[in-house]
Image (cartoon, rainbow, N blue to C red; front, side, top):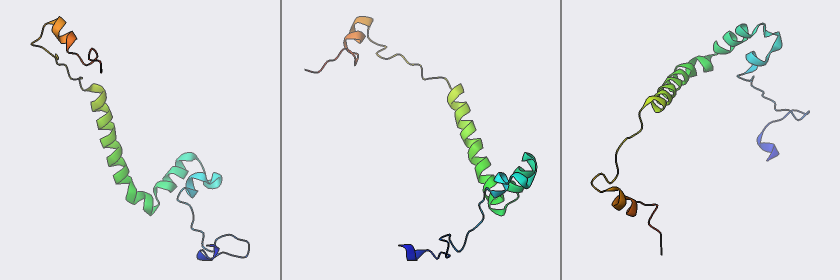
Length: 96
C-alpha cells in the first residue's frame, strides 16, 4: 500500500496542499479579526458560507420552535370515569 502515494525521500508526501485552516492557525497573520477575514476570503469558504448560514438559520428556527411550541394537551380516556381509566391505563396492565 505504500506505493499508492508518491513520497519524498524523507517520507513526507510529495504534494502537500495547504490546509483550509492555515490562515486561522498562523500566529504571524495578525489579530484575530484579520485572520478570520483571511479565512473567509478563501474561495472554498466563500462557496460554502451561504449553505452553512442557511442550515444554521433553519436549525436555529427549529430549536426556537421546539422551545416555544406548546406541548400537546389532550385528555386520554375522556369518556371514562377516573376508576375505569385507571384500570385501563398501560401502567396497570401487567403481562401474565
